[in-house]
Image (cartoon, rainbow, N blue to C red; front, side, top):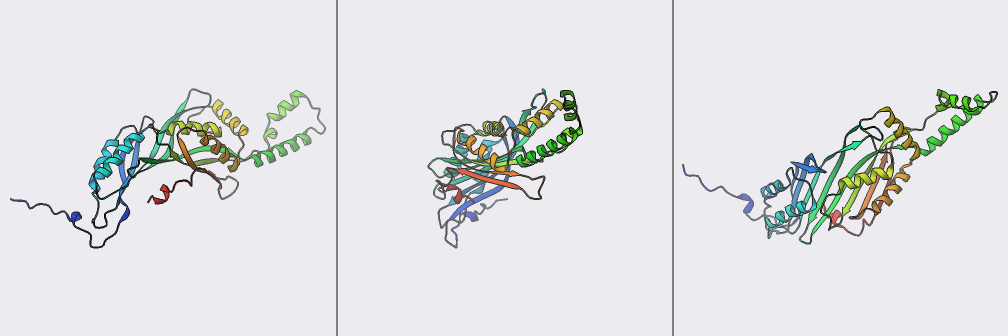
Amino acid sequence: MNRLPLEDIASAPSQRLGTLSWVGMEGIALPLRVAGQGVTGSASAGVSLDDPTARGIHMSRLYLALAELEERELSLPRVAAVLETFLGSHDGLSRAAFLDLSGEAMLKRPALISPLAGWKRYPFTLRCRHDGGGLQATLDLTVGYSSTCPCSAALSRQLIQQAFDEDFTDMPVTRQAVSAWLGSEQGILATPHSQRSQAHLSLRLADELDELPLLRLVDAVERSLGTALQTAVKRIDEQAFALANGQNLMFCEDAARRLHHTLRDQPGIRGFRLRVVHAESLHAHDAVARSEWNWEEESADEERP
């Protein structure tokens, strides 16, 4: 049986002329490796359609080019090479190529004191653009932490102070008596409210970076805040965590300022935008603070889909 040539409808000219800023695919399943660990990733790949007469792009060429990233350590040079393949396979059609890669990096984190360790997930998206003039990359990263309210801590201390004055009105103040009182339930009559919090970061990466600095950035952020969320713990770790929270009382404004100064000192970061969210345990709403540095100088993000 003779087979007729398969018709390529996409190669026919468009009946309605016009350029398009982005054409491609979203939600592509793609296994990645980040910080040495496997990641169930998702990709959005596209190119601009700059030929107003063209019916469409070659989506299969974009899909096949993504194989270069499968189960290989995610790096900026590899992403740049894939974007160059996007453009090379659409010569005459496209002048810009886009690739967003998302997933949850799995990092093993040690306990504060004991030898235990466990895994934590860090959601990320690497947003990349190539228009023939080089790679432009932005890393979106979410890092969780604990925050204890300074106002609540001060009010709790006041209540404990008042209870101490009342209990020791007619009692001799001896070291033994005070120590026993502090170890009783009266010694912790009130506790400040704490909440699980998140830092949402968007970081413009410098052109000269080769490796994806995700692990280095997570370490810097968690050191800056001082209250990283824990995995496997013993009681000694839980006590150390309580101490860390007490020594790092933070409004959302405090956390945002800490991160602002930390990120400005990170090598390979050309600009950033950050948002911290304290999921209030006192209120039925969140406390939020935002900051940015060197973010408005480029408008590439405004052109993204």
